[in-house]
Image (cartoon, rainbow, N blue to C red; front, side, top):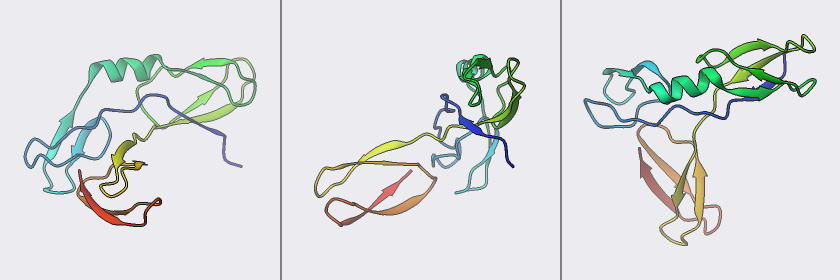
Length: 129
């Protein structure tokens, strides 16, 4: 049986490629641009510090556990109940407004061009990240 998972509350910033200005995949460290193949180094010390000091509740006994690392996902063990769980990475979402009906859509951004269909008015439109 897989250990329970808890999603981190902290997401790495969304950044653009230094070469083509397209959006990079979310994360920290050496990131390869899926649009042009350039290798980009993504660092953000406030995010690293926040990830290291993040406190989450143990899903088994609800005791507060400190992550102690900036890596996600990470396997943690609760000091109170010895329960194991995984602290997984948070995926950022952005709000996009439908050009037809102005409804707000929350999506996970991905590099490149995407075609979206608005659930409210059923019209299709393109977004580029």
